Image (cartoon, rainbow over all chains, first blue to last red; front, side):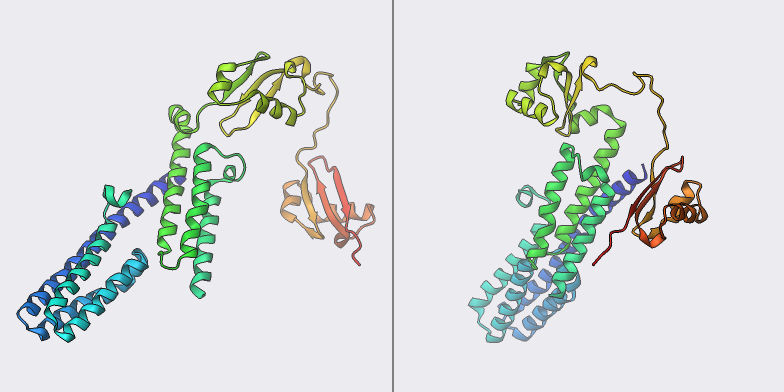
Length: 126
Length: 225
């Protein structure tokens, strides 16, 4: 009976950790996207210093979550997000408005895909 | 490189612990659910070791989940017969009172060739000598011969038997196992006396066993070149 209770306890702990992981991934992407929206809006008004600052904040958030992301998320997905971040910074330095829109879109797509993969849905299950 | 070694050690000890906690049955006779777990675990564990891009957690979490399911199913099956039947099935009688049960043979997809092969592997040539053949849930075929075909026992012949109990190892490759000696109610003085009678020193002994009636088996160490 003790062993069964321990197994049930461990299973419950794993389920709770999985729920925490979904919430953590949600919170991280929401925070990053908020900064990206601010950055994109600033870039649209050609306030590139402000846009760079907001993008740097988003990158700082992403990098500060390294311990969480490297344990819970897949490396190829993390690489895609990191690459998109550095591409976006380069575009912000070039101040190219047309290419910037695509840069923001690409980064958002990778972030959303990362978050989506942690959610339980028929799409992620099968 | 260091990560590969650390990951391998982590997975190795996690697997070792999991299989140990699942019990000894896992190693030998596997029920259906145990077979599923064993087959899955071996494959799951290897992926994070081969691909450094996959978090180790992705290998360890499925092992932990499978372990929990296995322990819970085994525990619940012990308490609920219906659940046991659902997960493990029930034994099938392939031969009843000396006659092949063709319905059960078909249901278990067991051919006559396989049946005869199983009988031969257990030393049975004449199918008519078998009263019952039971296909157990772990896939093993157990045979029960007709009473006239069963081996004669000492009780049937009314022969006196001597039971010395289970023989315990008391000396293994020159090392005395004092816990076993104590368990048999013996001591080092008895051991020294026994060895002296056989003209041996403790270090000369390869294996020595003793039972409750103090029956002793002794094997001397071979001379090494």
